[in-house]
Length: 312
Ligand code: NAD
Ligand code: SER
Image (cartoon, rainbow, N blue to C red; front, side, top):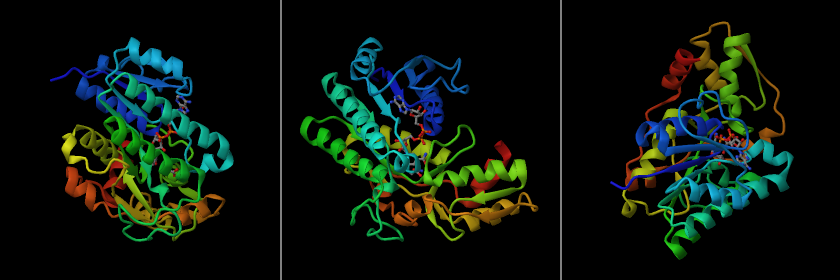
């Protein structure tokens, strides 16, 4: 077996912390280098190497890739949907340039595999709302969605033109208890658990009937690792795979939470994020990921809610 040395960029973020820890379990602590612009997340401290790095600095990234003998790169640094709408130029610049820097260096240094996540945010108001298919009308209306869709095609381009093994998933909104979410429209589904425990009430920034595709973090981490470990011939989609976990509204998650905290109440004060949520599908068809590399989720709303309360 080839000895892999992995660089995780954006390792202190919501996904980065858990993915880094999962990769360290598989490949060994010393073989997974965590890196981020911000300080090392407490959960990563002492578990393996950490490098403070701005992915926008291509030279520094290149030096690290060579110095650390990196063979795989996971690029998680990005500006998410809600923060992106506040500063569209910055979101475009970071989301695109970070990817182009990584793809270029990966090509030059003959990196074995690159992982870069896309999002259900690629879909727009003209995409089907229910069971949104892998291939359909895709006309995103947020800068985040535009950057993800453009990014998918850059990944495909590097694969087709230079054979770079880049793989990607369109994650739904992710719910986790280990690290905080970083400025997305789906963040309410994490905040609600913390507020339920601390204050027994939550004011939601989306309307009660806003259904969105969601997934529990353990499923997302497993999907990422399963995709990356799948034999190359099984990966037919070189833009990004749809995957699905669950779909619920604020009203539905609130009533699930009430089963654990009967005194819990929710109120609704929709803000600018409502428009973003309204532009996305409510549920996702992931049949292509299922047949290509065997994807299957473990968690539904009920099981996730129980696990969240056991761990928080
Ligand atoms: P996050 O905001 O929690 O983490 C991103 C990390 O990247 C942060 O720790 C941040 O400090 C770091 N970063 C930002 N700019 C950087 C730079 N210039 N150099 C180095 N590091 C930098 O985001 P996340 O939720 O962990 O998302 C990771 C990836 O997954 C992103 O591409 C995101 O678009 C995608 N995604 C996330 C979700 C979700 O619900 N969390 C859903 C779909 C897709
Ligand atoms: N959870 C992400 C967001 O809301 C979707 O990519 O931005």
